[in-house]
Length: 549
Image (cartoon, rainbow, N blue to C red):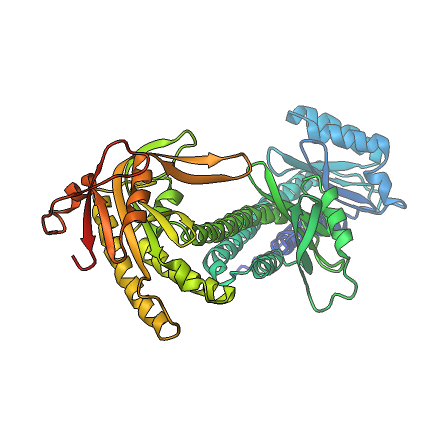
């Protein structure tokens, strides 16, 4: 039986096996690394050991000439490997080379200047390349062609790890960016859904600031509001471990110094908040010196949140203005309703009935009510008692008129002049005027009964009412300092004459009012009286109605 004997391994074979094992070890170790600097460190250490080199350099950079990572070994001063002016210029030219031939030429120049015996290109991608270079061997032996080829193979294999590492970094960056965006959307959604529960301005400011501090993982923060006098700190938040926080003046100073630039490695981050060109607020954040600094991604996240917060603050400002306008509206409405019916006030405030300064011609029904024997009622009473009776009477009559949507034009002593149809006309103005007159008589009768329980009254005490319908001029009259809305015209004077001449317990209508209301109110037909009224050249037809008609 023939025995086959394997040939003994030669020294060259053993060296080759060692180099291949080195290539495998490099691949295995680089697969677990996360940073280019660590890859270069493992690569250079393993290659120098495999080739027995006394010094070596591994570096990476981009096409702009900027070095990304460098590892140098065996130099008395490692700076000489990549930081001397001449060597640095050669490296920059190598990294900026636009062709393989040009890169090889600059690489050779750098290797000779740096004392390297052999080198291989690390071509990661179009934007990133590097060098793996070895100096003399400890044994003094020269590098063979096979050594150069093996170095190229090792460098080429390392490129695959660096590409994978770059891809992982891009994925991690994308994942971090997505996480920041999700966090920003989460905070924005929390602000949008929860802001209604924080209805007071200080609570809103505190809530917004806390959400931003938490989203940016800051140690402390402040929200400042821009005022006419500058910045005012409206809310502050700090973690429990803060020992010495800056005062408001220091925070305002940092906000004023902010130029809007994107920080690279900053411990303080400032963002101004605004809608359009209006800057309304600013957020100031700070991180501790022991933790990571703010970066451009944090600035982008704060910008997204700032836009959301600016909208919330602007809506809050508009809502606060709306509340103030509503308060003023209600105050003005309550004031006007002391003189004008609520429906008329609503028309005035809504702009539906706005009398012009020049005057507006309107057809109105004018009511004049006047108390009879008021002098006999009050002559034996104290002034305080008299004032109380008059206020009670006028308040009751005013309530009746307002209930019938009248505009109280003036109060003269115990006389009241009211308008139906000014400043806004309605089809039933004359009818409402007559109904109001009947209601005033009924209310005054009840008032007399209550007075008689307290006072001795003359039997002649009563009230007469006159109503006239016609065209009047409604306008604001007076001076620049004081205006009074009133009406003027024959119907005003006629109503006053009818009211003054109406016996107690009656109301007197002019001919036009009677024509407009008699059928609608089913009034008993009657012949008019002829009344001589001051200021009217002819006798005036008057219809006198006793109370209860």
